[in-house]
Image (cartoon, rainbow, N blue to C red):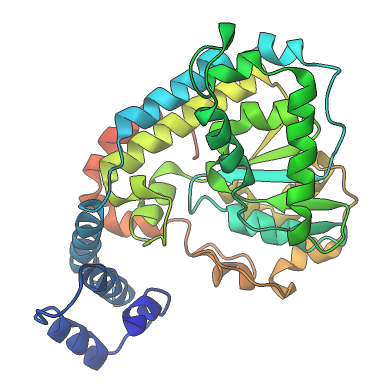
Length: 354
């Protein structure tokens, strides 16, 4: 039902259009995903009208329908993050220091969905020395390849434990292959961006195969970030977003794992907070470019003028100048977000954008 899918990115639905969507609710021929789209479209329509209670009800119903098809396991995700911490230690990285792949090409932008990563990508892609590859699956594919490798000796079982037994020569080969395999997506600039958000779970692997790569951690106020993800119907890959509790737990796991990378790879990850970019665009742009070893270019401040294809839910926002309206939008829904607050926990809320 293309019209319902389009409605998710369109504001200002008329009463007549809303009435037509309500008529579809009683259509017994409506497929499961068409009903999901319908609920999210109604949620967006009522949010645009300022009826936040009704909007939340439809967002919640759409997520519940989508979650019924999902096999996401929050406990398993937490275990995977703990395994990364146990294996990817400072000692492991010191073991491979000095025998690395010198390629400086990639800038990896990681973060939760809706954390502002598309804006950071657009800013960097406005620079004359930077290409974009959007969200390429190469690192995730490599992790799956390692996951399927039979265990041997002290390497333990599966990924990431197997990283303890991979030698420096093979790690460098993985890095060279990544550079070659992603060349097809590039336009010839010396630096390129991979904005796959879920790469945060594999920063240890990233550093081992491309130790000179830059990594940027996109953060945003946790309530704003998590609820924005909850009311955005993703095409695929973000199954934790269908539940306020699951998305809150995912945010906690994200923050804890990023804290680990800060400890074992000090100075290798630049944290950029969305609200800081909104408040001081030029200051943050200069900070980001300096971290990436790039000279300042004014085009990065006029990122909304950069022409390119954008396939993420934030495509419309990054074609406009910086605006503050979205920073506090979540507060309209605060009365309904107690499960999210409980999952995030009071220790996280005042301290960590995510």
